[in-house]
Length: 580
Image (cartoon, helix red, strand yellow):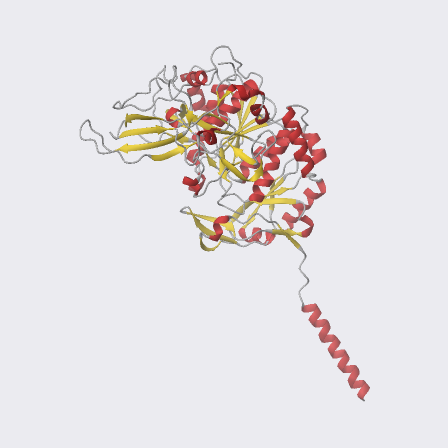
């Protein structure tokens, strides 16, 4: 009897134990955390609440190249030599992620309900999209809404993770942080009249280094921008110089401009330029969220295309239009690199290193590293806010200009009859000025200047001697909107500047003088004799009266925010490539 009871008790306990085991959750599969993805602002910005789970979100998964150390060493050797470049096929065979790794990433994304939206031949990224809920689950992150700079953005409040099997395959995930949006580095004259007037500029404007600059205020006068002929002469391109025939300049921008084709034709006709060999890759997007600054990108696009053509009138101009100003810009650059569909790429945009997760920058830096290995020269605007402390709150270099595989192009002011000064504009306004009883002019306020700084992430390349960490800019061209250029936009003419002018101008100059390979080693070496160092000289004020307001403006030059003349301009002004 006792034996039977014992047997029954054992049976009951065994059944209970089996039930408990069956009810217990399976052990979670191990995951690998991807560090360097949490945006700094989540620690102090106001959190509004969880991001809506049904909201759509696009992300880009960036893969690690094979043999990263070997890739860096090979790219540095090839860039320094300026020859022995590899083809995209050779790069893919030696350094691209394996097809198996790439397939595993795609399979995981699909298994999480995400749609794979973009792939690339060199297997450096996979684009995907889904709801906030799906993205959160796939990468084990909480996505919240934050108030940042007066706007509501969605961002991750911690680092994402992936299955451990993908931990060594994936370098970064971009798109989780909605605050990382590239800004066009285009700068308009901020005072005095309508930005774009529907009448042609004077035929001789800028023909003599813009001598129409008035030493004193002239009622109704707005500072005179350069024409193509005027700025070419100021940059040493007078006489018989190459036109860029047989070369192509690739420009990458977001959104495009609906009026670009007609604006380019008007610009060419107004200034006597030959018709441009122009094509656009990617469709124009005419509207978008306010945070994306579609109108700013439209002006940016016009400036880039028109002035690349002005400096290299014989070169083909290829405009690549990205559908958004975040991950799509870098994906577009990588598509060019993966097929080597251009040897010269101009980027007139960027974001502060401070505001960009380091893992994302490291992964995107690989794209520029491979570009250098393939003989593609990439140039980027260094920024329009000095050391960025006035705009970002802290000093910061801008990315992608801070990549050691990119030539960072800063800006100068080109005033008549004097040496270039670092672009750093300060403006003092006397409201409703009259000929008598002018009120005292208050202190001049910083209104923009050449971006520059020391990278917090990237070491200096071997050719940037004397620096431990990457320092920007490398070289400079005209960028001050008060010594800027005519741009045609929506049929009108306006004065525009910014390092957005300097970047396509530089890229077009490379089509004439250095069409293959990263230009930076050449600039720090043989081409250094063509560069004029820029010191700490200042100039001004230039005084003028607004067309409609009657205000009197005093413009001071050469005082950049937080930067000396050399820090704002790098090696200096590139104005002597052709012996002038």
